[in-house]
Image 1 (cartoon, protein in one colour):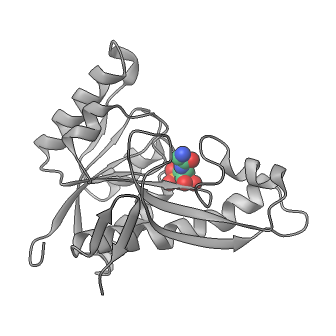
Image 2: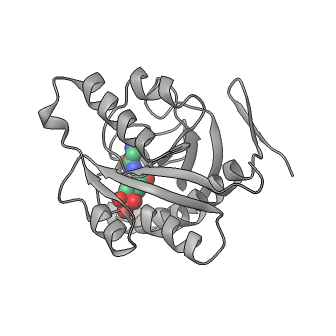
Length: 205
Ligand code: GAR
């Protein structure tokens, strides 16, 4: 992909702070990519607002008007294709995706999860980590496969769990690392440096 700017589509449901870090890295010239569109299932997602502020097409596609997950994902695929998206970036997208989206973007869907996978998949990962009593927590960027938070791991970062941590304090420490490693992982993809072999992702120099 050298010489060509990778077009990414960001899917988000919440505050969009990871989207913001991607925007900031692109604008600072640290990440060679273009955000072709931002899509949210949630009209109130602040991610849409962030996109609009940066003149990025921001689309609300409401899952409630579709008959099922597959029909919703077909609408996502149509919109992503219309915008020429090559890599789908899930950034706090709180929906389970189906084979309809997976097959449209084989090997080209990434997710960020606020835990050191394979520990603590699913919802409330930070709370799960605190409840378990781990001393080290973190976040993971991985390719998406048919499971929930199970795909090949691209990059991880660790943070300490400190005495007296709450879900909020631990989440804040983790999300700061998310903002660092997600743009990094997208950059590696954009540079064509990620190779997936089974479960393993190797990074070429
Ligand atoms: C992030 O912490 C992300 O890791 C998490 O949602 C948050 C979104 O924050 N994703 C998941 O839990 C997915 N299972 P943001 O909207 O500010 O980027």
